[in-house]
Length: 317
Image (cartoon, rainbow, N blue to C red):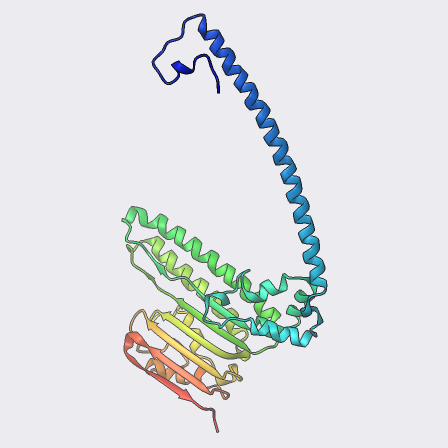
């Protein structure tokens, strides 16, 4: 850009009093040019935004009309529901978590027809995954531990409530279908200083676990496959997770496959269930859940107690 002061730019030159107004006039002239350019840019951006909006509207129009002639529209409901079932992840995978990202939920959000078909296909809702977070207290100093434990208890309670609500929905929509259940949970809160708030945290864990256990037990007659990985507090009459292990055979009439892994948080010599005679842990379990009449496969493990993994295959003849 031409300027009578070009030779002085980027130098130590100090303009005279007469030159200063002239320089200011040049500056204002260029400011006016910038304002004009900014206006042109805004006009172009507005035009571009309008074009993009029109393009988006046309793409939506095309997509919706293409959906009308999609081959999948020709599939009868029974075939479509079979495809839906094939989309289900294995129960151990993270994709099986009962969240808005679960394939069944996503299928039910595609359109009204698919939503109704998902509700009319109870098998889509028959896999229950309950994975509770492990609670490990950080080794805070005592004056910090109470606050940290309160926060942890509140977070744990919120997770339990979310799982409880989701499980209630899944159980309702699965209607009378046989259930496959995965539950991973621990009753202990490890680490940290022993404070009153730690006891509250442990109580929160027991209460939350008990809430979910009661919900599962209410539908035990529908259990077909179960996989439990449980951290149980030994010799604790308040243990909630152990309630899953002491059921009468008539409580699980269609249980076909069971896998139970127990991590003893304390040595457990006597079963929690007072109706079971004093015996070793596995003897107590053998009198309950694993004696379901339909049982075909059983896996038991207690790593901490170095219990040998035992597997039973084949049904009752």
